[in-house]
Image (cartoon, rainbow, N blue to C red; front, side):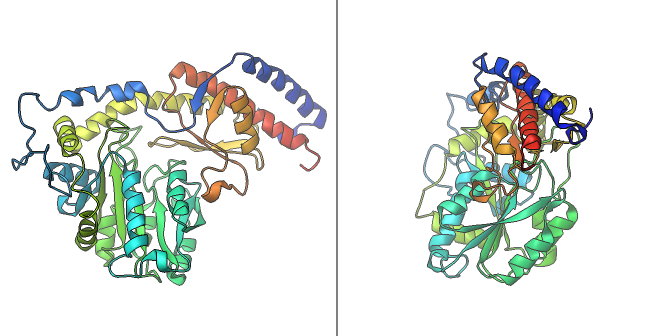
Length: 428
């Protein structure tokens, strides 16, 4: 296809009129399709139904040390669950805390504890005039919401194909003591699907922050979520930090939310022994422990890292065709028009889409009015403000293939209409 920029005004108007008629036909269908969030499809959840029978009803659910998981105790989690999640995160079991069904909950609590108590003897963040977090953008809206909700100033830094702009990160972290943390999704980033390069990971490990209580919030949510084999390789942040002598500088998070049940998984935090000792002491006032029966259920069902990878191959067999369908639709309907670009991730849950500057909000609105719910324009930036109004996060996993094909056709139509309106605008 010829780029719209090479078309004459009359030709653009004729194209717009034709597409609007097609769009009105979609609106008349009364569609109700949802691509707003990265939810597992029911078929993906079905893969884990046998986990519900992983513990026999006629035997006590004891962990490998003979502890009754139905009872109180084991604040940091049962040993085999700590070991399993440590394998996913690349950390020894002794440095792992098992939480509930949400790693986001662990991240929120970790920030909240820092606000209330400080970090390893530092002044509690709530007593400081200004606290800032770096937010690679486009990025994960729920990360940004955590810090914003606690009164922390979110500071955007640009993302590249290799990870955050580390020149900017280093300059900010090493000169501004108000910067206490940075959000990271290092493998198959949300929404682009980028994996941080070895150089980027080593630069993180080598940071010399102005604030002694600065921490890297390393949300490795998609550590095992490959769509293709062998998938992207991510250097271990823990190993890089140990080599650099900065072993206390990170908190790593993950969960089984998109491995087993989204609403009934287990989560984990891995950090240095000294960091974990502080967290354990503070956590002892909050809870006696998370759901150890569910921890045991997961271990019995998944086994070890090899079992997790086998489960994720089954997941990929269901969702990889959906990613392929979306990418083929974009290639067919939009490639060559010069109005959009998009990522081609090897894993994770999202595709990052960029339309023409000033068209994302219009595209999302057009789709909504025709019955397709998308993640809100601007959601991938702090405070919901995309300075270019161009980025849209695409979540292919939940709809069926048939629904997804219809949603993609409509989405591409909305992209083209928004682009043509922009190009025909007197201010274009």
